[in-house]
Amino acid sequence: MARKNSQRERGPSQRQLRVAEEIRHVLAGALMRGELHDPALADVSVTISEVRISPDLKNATVFSLPLGGTKVGEVLKGLNRSAPFLRAQVGRAMQLRYAPTLTFVEDKSFAEAHHIEELLKSEKVARDLTVAREKAAREADDGEE
Figure 1: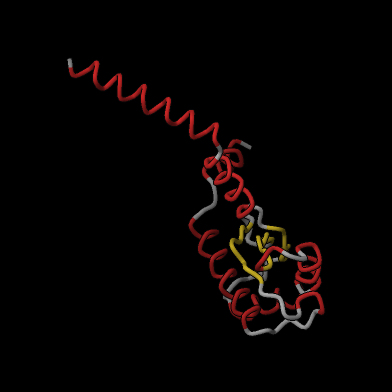
Figure 2: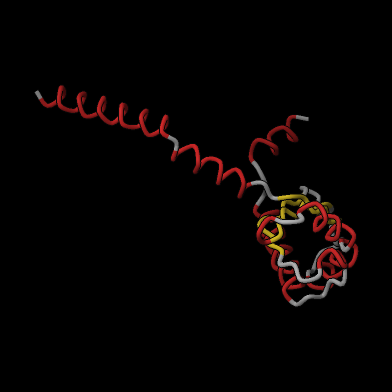
């Protein structure tokens, strides 16, 4: 049991990272070539930003988002309907014992980054940064004397 906790604390292994990145490339290639015929994916460009794979390499979570961020729910449903086909594509392209089950979820990192950017631009944060700079400058001046 201690081993499982230490695995969680360490994060993904090099093999997990390598396999996840290769899966990301295979999926991006399939999407770029327009191999999916689901109506929800017609004329939609999808970004696959990250793939996280379980330690046993049997389950992969694919973080994706349609460009422009429109029709996210509909596009994700289309991707999940196409997951068995994409799983077969991954299985053919990679030398794995089992092709992982793919689950597509919304990538919220872009929205979070935008939110942080807006916070940093806010008047209150700018005021706090100015106060912090002035305090640091005073402390530096006091240290030189």
